Structure formats: C-alpha cells, structure tokens
Image 1 (cartoon, rainbow, N blue to C red):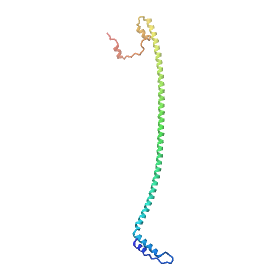
Image 2 (cartoon, rainbow, N blue to C red; image 1 turned 90 degrees about the vertical axis):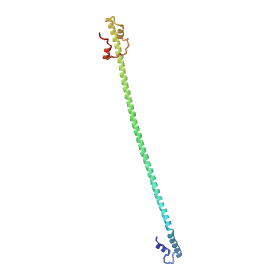
Image 3 (tube, rainbow, N blue to C red; image 1 turned 180 degrees about the vertical axis):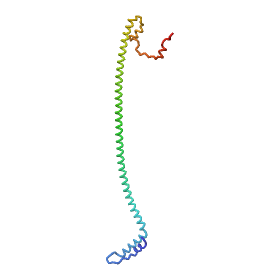
Length: 188
C-alpha cells in the first residue's frame, strides 16, 4: 500500500447520513487503521503470512511423511513377500536335490549289493570247482600212484606221496623259461 491510500484512510470523505455509523467512531477507526498500516502492518502481515506459509509447509510435510510411511510399509510388505517366495523356492530346490541325491545313493548302494552278491556267487562257484578239481587230482594221484607202484616196484616214496595227494597242496610257483634254465643241472 502506498502513502496516497493511507492518506485517504486518514481523511475519509463519506457523505453524512441520518441513519448510519457514528462519524467520530468511524474516523477514529480509520485513524487507527492508518497508523497500523504505517507502523506494524508489514511486520504483522508478514508474520501472519509466515505462520500461514509454515502451516501449509507443515501440512505438506505431514502429507509427504504419511505418503512416505505408506510407501515404506508397502515396500516392506512387498519385500517380505518376495523373501518368502525366494525362501520357499530355495527350500523346494534343496528338498528336490536332497531327494535326487538320496535316490542316487540308494541306487548306488543297491547296485553295489547286487554286484557283491554276484561276486560272492562266482567266488562260491569257483571254490566249489577248486574243491572238485582238488578232489579229482587227489583221486587221480592215488590212481597214478597205484599204477606206478604196479609197474615200478622201486619208485620212491616221495613220488608216491606226492601223487597220492598227501604232500603239501599249496600251488607251486611257475618258473619262467630263464629261471628254468638256471635250475637245470649244467650239461657236461
């Protein structure tokens, strides 16, 4: 407001009417208003405007904070749901891998047991065959010993003992041709 407006307030020119406001009261009010406008109005209006602006900023800040809080809560819920899904997927994958590993281990153990049973069966068959061969050798040795005794009455007792199966039955080590030539008696 400029000075011209303030002067008009100080010296108002209203027409006088019979039924109206008391002229002196109106004049006093106008003088006080002019004094206020000149002295404290800018300060008071400024502080009122600042208060009003602060209130608006406060409401705006409150709205921002409420929105941020709401969004943070939604983000937390979304993150928790995603974490729950990741955990459930991880648990499911671990359970599937554990089941597959357990199945493979069980299969491997069963295969090992089958192979072991097959090997034990083969070993039993080989042992039975060995026993039959030894029995046959013993019988053949006795028969040969009898035949040798009948045809060569002076045969050595060691030969008969060996042929009859009474000698040590441990397998003899086969000699290689080079070793055989060393063990022979030298030629004259």
